[in-house]
Amino acid sequence: MLQDIRQNIQGTAAKIVVWLIVIAFAGFGIESILLGGGSSGVAEVNGEEISPQEVQQMVNTQKRQLIAMLGENIDPALLDDQRLSGQALEGIIQRRLLAQSAGDMKLTVSESELGRIIAGMEQFQMNGEFSPEVYKSALAQAGFTPSSFKAGLQQDLVINQLRSGLVGSEFATPAELDLTASIVAEQRDVRYLTIPYDSAQTDVQVGEEQIEAYYRENESDFYSRETVVLNYIELALEDFFEPVDENELQSLYEQEKNSYQYRTENRVSHILLTRGEGESDADFSARVSAVQSALDGGEAFAAVAGEYSDDVGSASAGGDLGFSGGDAFPEAMEEAIASLEVGAVSPPVETDAGTHFIQVTERRDGDAPSLAELRPELEQRIREREARARLLSAVEELRDIAFNAQDLEGPAAELDLEVQRSEPVARNQLDGLFASPSLLSAAFSEDVLELGHNSEVVELSPRQFVVLRVAEHNPPALQPLDSVREDIVATITERQVREAISARAEQAVARLRQGESVEDVADDLGYEWQLEIGAEQDAGMLPPAVAAAAFRLPAPAEGETRVDFTLTAAGDAQVIEVSRVSPGSYASLSAPRQQQLRQQIGRELGELVLREYQQGLRKAADITVY
Image 1: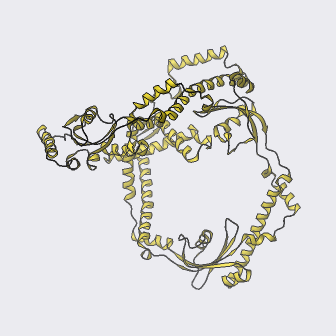
Image 2: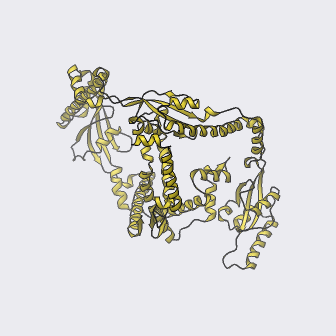
Image 3: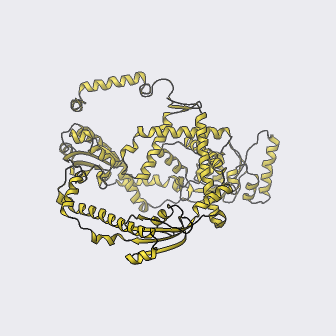
């Protein structure tokens, strides 16, 4: 049935069905079908609605974070919307509860502080200065508007105030410090000898019967990987590059010369006076006059800004607002800035924010590079722009033709493309083109692998598209013994060597427990031994395996020892004797270690308080998930 649908989906009957669906959507609205009637929200937290858009935004953010952490070879299943949406909704609910609690506490962030933080973010800067164009572009690519980004950032900052207050409210008591120090600063006298892995290798012989028995008992480990050999057509942006028209290049160069990055930029400082609540006209005018008098009297602009400006964010920096290319500030301010000489101060300028005194502290002219200097960049831009249109057109044609085609040769011939063949590709392919999770998912899908269809045209990036078809399928098969013999010998050898090393270590432990010294046993057996007096677990005085084993042993009684052995990752055996244990004390720690310990305990307790606080908010909240 599925095969019939696939072959006839472009027929008349199918088109009628599609039009009926379109009419239904037009009459009732797709939202009513997908989301149901009533509220459009997916949840409510104390009466505040959580919208589907918020959840999707969080899902998209989680996807970007996963891709950034795991790279392009990430398992596609991890990016499934259904898998991520539950986590996203839970995160939004917890965030909403904290934001509501912070609001109840009247925690806030001023607009000037918010602006200062945004202006200081490197991702919004060009040549070390805040760029409004870069800001808007970066937000658009991430799916934000300036207002939604500012609202989210403001909420983050307020929530962080709450979290910092809770975490910072905890501290370690003297009893807690003493107890923790007695453990983390504990000292032990440790003797240990090392039995090298290599010392037992000569004693191991692997016979044919062992090899054959291991092969029979572990056949499941010796199956070859399932692989497919793929025919595929690849469309890349570079394949559609064509020579650049000189007139178009010249036109783009003229546009580039007039762009914002080559405009004259002014570094601006200001003094902002805002009318206070209940402040009379006379009082406000008196403040404006006081500023004017101070400036006319020769006081430094930065000093006057620090004393009088109501813009807290810039007042501490002498009123500095950074650079503007003519569109960063309100129109009245930009007009005043354009008319000022460097160092001059404007008369009072009125905007919705209040009354400004403005000074241009630096002016830099934006001289555009020559056509020769910009030619490579502009040519590449034109080539890519025009090639992108041709690429997308070719992709759409390939989608239409390949969908019902019996192979890839026909579509390739019709579109003058080349069918390529891959090397064997495994389900966990780690390199090459087909390490891409989306291509692996397509290649091993039921539709392609079992039913033998062409895949959909897979978008690897806006510059690269691939359609594929299975040419050969190589199911897992038991490999002959001769092809895996060396691996079996290596496995048996390692196991037997470790058993032999462990047996030697147990013999050494038995001798130590009978009263012989580490020195005598090591000398007798020809092994190296070492002694560490007053070793601490995390001080790096002992090898990691020795430290872990030595501090895992119970403290010996006076005049006695504790003995054990451990195997390292390299296969060596280390026989350990602990002869004396001295509890640590807070008073004996250095000042830096005392401070570190206080901070560590305070941080751990603070995190515990924060978790308890969040759980309390959750229990007391009225939460509805639709």
